[in-house]
Amino acid sequence: MRSQYRSRGADGGLRSNAGKLTRRWRLAGTVLALMFAAAIGGCARNTPTNVAIRYLASLRQHRYAACYAMLTDSDRQTRTLAEFLTEIPMGPDADPVWFRQILDATNFQIGAEQRNGNIASVAVTVTTPDLPLWERTLNAQAGPSDSGAELAAGSLNSGKYPTITYDDLIYLFKEHRRWRVVAAFARRDHLSDLHREAAAAYREYEFSDAIERYKSIIEQLRGLAATGAIGLAHRYEAELDYIQSAQAQIPQSREYAARYLRLSDVAMRMSEERVPAVFGAIKNRGARAIDNVQIAVTWYSGRGKDAKPVFTERHPIIVTPLEFTDFSRPVIPLLPDEKRSFGFILTAPVKVQQDAAPYVTIGSIVFTQSSAPLPNLKQGNAAPAEPAAPGASNVPSPLAQPSSAPRSPTP
Image (tube, rainbow, N blue to C red):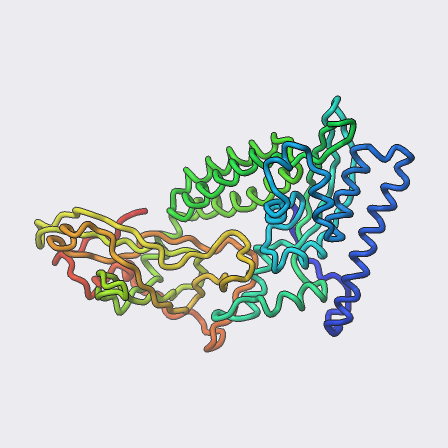
């Protein structure tokens, strides 16, 4: 996958209306190019290439019903038009609020056609905003307490956003003597479910499991005769690279957590739901940004040398998503010299909470792998504080704990 930051056009300071006009001309030019390509294809309009061109032209013109009408019978039986609008092949993976604007910033270039009886494919080179990187970049400009939604429109109008270019395929099947676009929604649904499970394994720090799941999904997508499946595989490959990098840095992350992350003001009290919960704060005293932090609460029975662990529960207190979130939340890691509050409800069985004492430590962390810039903290670009002593993250919390403090549990 080739990803790069492109500042399109030198008129970054143009006003919004001028930017919109420029974007409309770009859109019109792309649509005309697609229509012209179809025209020079000869009189045989019912060819895979011409159908692919008409599909993309309709998509760029926001004529989604026309795109739907080009699908195979089985795909239209699987999806109603309303359902199709939530998952349009070759369209951006974005909420309706952003779908049209991101689509307008996407360019398609038709490539070679291949046929094998009633099955055909048409190559398409796609250049589109790199959504996760774009979101993080705008969030960094907006600052730690805001999302980048207000900056997004200006970014699109000016043409200044990170882009990604990849090769995809439009698959077609000949039925009723006409070439139809293949979406294979049923199979895509299954792979989407598997992807959610793989992403959940990553968030649970089950890196090896997540990596194997991702590899299997990507292999299946690359072998799937479905329009846009290759593009989806590209997106999942970017997530896989992220997870593999995180796994490779596990030894460094453990050392960093012990040396530079500090828990403070940790206390157990009743939550708003009137159940026992843990509240506190965490500070990053080092120089690395951190995407994810998981807290471990280990319950011990007995005292002193007789203390034994009887139950361990783990809670995420910082979770920075891999995927584009439609600017629904600030996507910002725990920054150097930043302090954040946290709180979570305890999940140990009632008997364990009654008979044992909890000990709170930092369980696992994931370093930020993104190339997006980091925002400045409100107090300025403060240099990281002096390193904490090794093992400082395991200083006993105000919660009850054995008199002989155990080591931090490994992830």
